[in-house]
Image 1 (cartoon, rainbow, N blue to C red):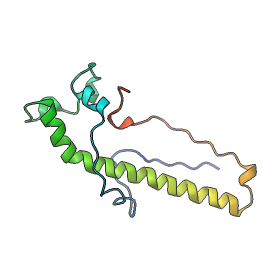
Image 2 (tube, rainbow, N blue to C red):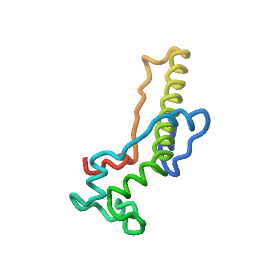
Image 3 (cartoon, rainbow, N blue to C red):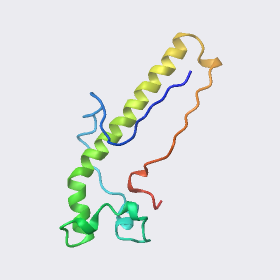
Length: 122
């Protein structure tokens, strides 16, 4: 049996009830992400988040605006997608138990890449 779970993946939109489960959390750009945005060390070009196209006068102002804006929704949805995966894997494991084959079944997880959520410099 093959089960494909496309999340977490852009455009970072997850179905209810997972879409609102983490709306109460406030996320901060990780230190590695801050350093990346400050080019310490220089980041890959795709990873500069458009700072050169912003009206911010400093990287700290840019990060502050980013954290209080779209970053929150992005992270809330991302966490919701991971929770949705956990929920569905739980259903799979429960089905294996119900069928009595959980001790005779190998479950393999693989991924095509990791997002790292602004922690590429880690």
